[in-house]
Length: 118
Image (cartoon, rainbow, N blue to C red; front, side, top):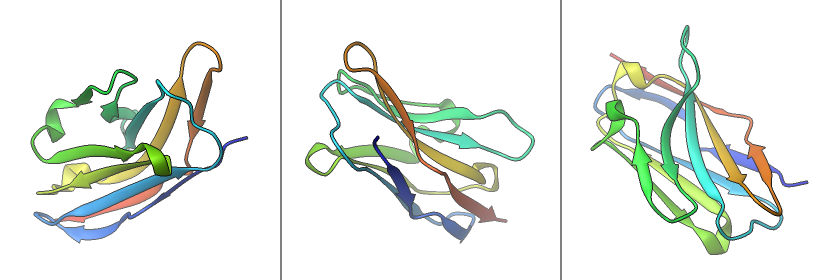
């Protein structure tokens, strides 16, 4: 079983920056999508940033231009650089490694809290 560990969350003032990291232990195969989700208080979990299996990236509209997803395949690590943070960015951020086909898997981290104060 693969373990997924996130780090980098914390408390920051509006306008500040944070960098989240997420590393998966074990074997991660090619064509794995690496994603960051967010669960804000009172809202449903949403996909914030995605690094798809074809190496394309995508962002939810509210973070486009402020957040950047990147990855280091050699380290099985995905990052989320978050700049110009807003109070609406507050939530628990979850990392996800997902692969369709064979082998297929859907691994999640435990989440890291990001709190942005106004």
